[in-house]
Amino acid sequence: MARFAPLYDVPIEDAEVDVRSSFDVADKLGLEGPGAAFDEVAFALSIKSPAPAEQVRKLIAHAERGCHAEQTFRKPVPVRTTATLNGEDLRLLESHV
Image (cartoon, rainbow, N blue to C red):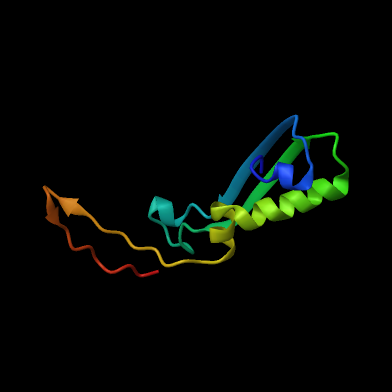
């Protein structure tokens, strides 16, 4: 957000983001469950600035578009896992997700 603040004339005196997620722990514990994927991810911003609220809203919208983490959560992407064992390729079992 700090990177884009000058574009919107928003001086930032202080800023924090709290990122939280929720998920079902059953699958993690070896129990039947829906899997360990997040059910929700929440970004809570706290900003201290003398800028008008409308300028801060525009800044936040721009920062959301430029945030790789937030955009990845909004649009699922393929995930690939590879592994080596003692320097040799370890062929992994197919995921059942």
